[in-house]
Image 1 (cartoon, rainbow, N blue to C red):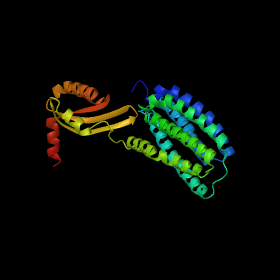
Image 2 (tube, rainbow, N blue to C red):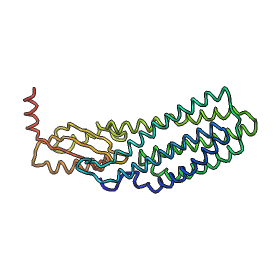
Image 3 (cartoon, rainbow, N blue to C red):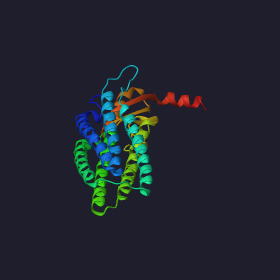
Image 4 (spheres, rainbow, N blue to C red):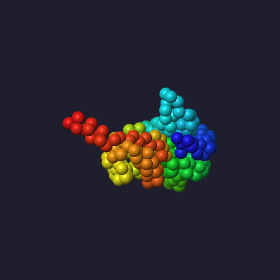
Length: 295
């Protein structure tokens, strides 16, 4: 279990992204209240979840780095998954709030200061692009970092939407563009949030990792010389980048169990990239006798 989690290798980028995003959040909230723009406030709401998500991701990394104990034999690596799950739930709640506000503003759009709104949105876009650059590599390895990356991505596109809304209001005076784009910003994140939510739930429910074919794995173990049967096979994810597997191997000759174990571990590592494995060897004759006893 050495080497740390996938997210821990990118905590420096996470820290910088949090500092930048948190600083700009204050600017965007002030700008949204000053200009009266729902699109800007919607983007600020997403940026608030960015800050919360990045903070939780960083806290989760710190917890995940703690060593295992007799009470927590896997350590705290699952905190990353819990953080990703909470991020997804918060994003969905924020989306509902933005859509509700957009509905009311469509019937009575307020006055909007499009010039300051445009300036704040452009600065926000630059901040998000830099943060995305920092988080991109980690998002390919960690579900926790992927959640943070998705939030910044959504906010970046939100900034683009705010810029568009500001230009429309500035050039045409059509203020209703602001709640329309605010609602669009809210809707955009839903599919990506669902992907994040589903990924976190799969890990918490200990589903087989998507990149591993459990039946193929079972067949490969059963085909090893000396193995007559494979049962009680389980494959699950501890946290992003850390899969675990356990199985019972029924062998014809217990004297060759060492060779069978070595071949099984080599196959699991080279073909399925599984290193955290627990294998139990069972005697074929004893297993057969036990099966007949239970008939």
